[in-house]
Figure 1 (cartoon, one colour):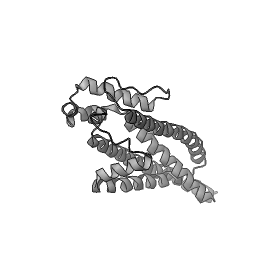
Figure 2 (cartoon, rainbow, N blue to C red; figure 1 turned 45 degrees about the horizontal axis):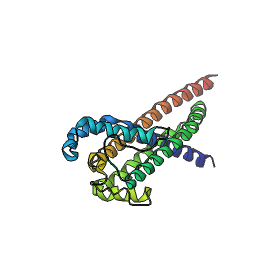
Figure 3 (cartoon, rainbow, N blue to C red; figure 1 turned 60 degrees about the vertical axis):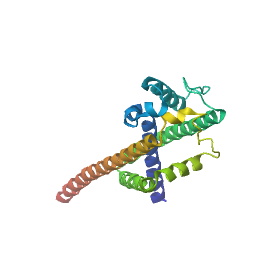
Figure 4 (spheres, rainbow, N blue to C red; figure 1 turned 90 degrees about the vertical axis):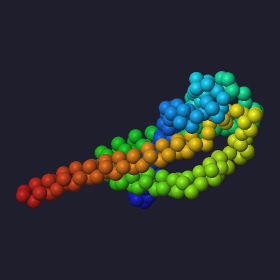
Length: 223
């Protein structure tokens, strides 16, 4: 039973890190700002860079802010179906926010108890879990990002409103698929970094605690 709860906590801790990284990446506007020129979005969309940024910033604020408001892009027209889709996207991100906050509370208490009791194996398990996920996600992305992108939308949406008609929802022109690929790669890289960090932290703490135990045993032996 103890092993089960240890693994369960490691899963919760890993999930908290992953959701936190997703939240961070979505809010990391600099990636999109870089892609504006890198992907030549002004040419694709026939919009100025300032106009592109204004509409993209609105999308991010709309999805991440807790305060609910009516969806209305600053300068780009949208269809009723497009509006529904972005409302559904917002619901997903708000759900992620709530789950992340719940996991934060669990992780704060759990990490405090485990570190206090020198039970650090959860760091080792978390490191392994964070290593497995990128491999699972990266393989299908590299094989066919198009298919992965479609499967992702079919899993999270029960309609086809995510398939935009540029004439009805020109916002799709400022959201090229390559940008989502870059965001996915960023998430994977950050997850791998956290996997490495938790592994290093585990090794250092394990070495520290083992050293203390060794000193304690030698002291008792001399007595």
